[in-house]
Amino acid sequence: MLKLMLTVGWISIMTIGAFAQKGLSDAETRALNELSGEMSDCSVYFLITATCLEGNPEPSTPQLIKTLKEQANKILQLAVTTGRMVGVTDEGIGARMRLTRDDMMKSLNNNCTNIAVLLEKYVNFCPQLAQNADPRLLELMQGKKCTGSYKC
Image (cartoon, rainbow, N blue to C red; front, side):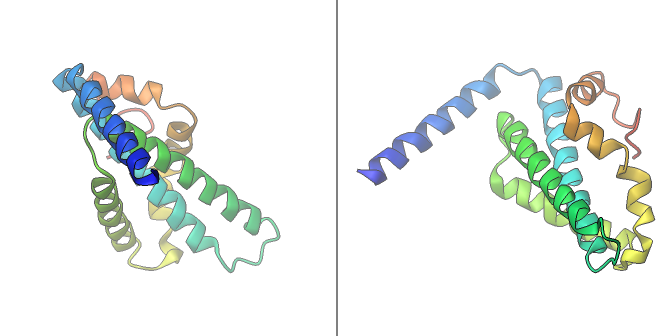
């Protein structure tokens, strides 16, 4: 019985996703795919920042790490939901995140003392995106990829 319920649930999810994709223009599909990618980038940014803070003796550090991890999870869920609207699979999100993590760590020279490299690009953008993605989606729909607080 459980297997039947899971199968029916999976078919329902896949059908809804297929219908959602059909109503989107190419521009909407590109914008949502880009938005999903930026959201997954921010999730990785939050996690790397949290990891780099571990062991810091400041009394506020444990709460900051907890907040960063919560932000990472929240925006990852948004990335998955947004990506699914245009056909991005969980495996696709995972691959994006691994590639992003590798690129970010390379930019840090695998050393958290260089965290300012990531902060410069993401410290304003990611919290804004996590709070309200609508303005960013509008920018992307207008073809404005490297504008506002997002630095390419």
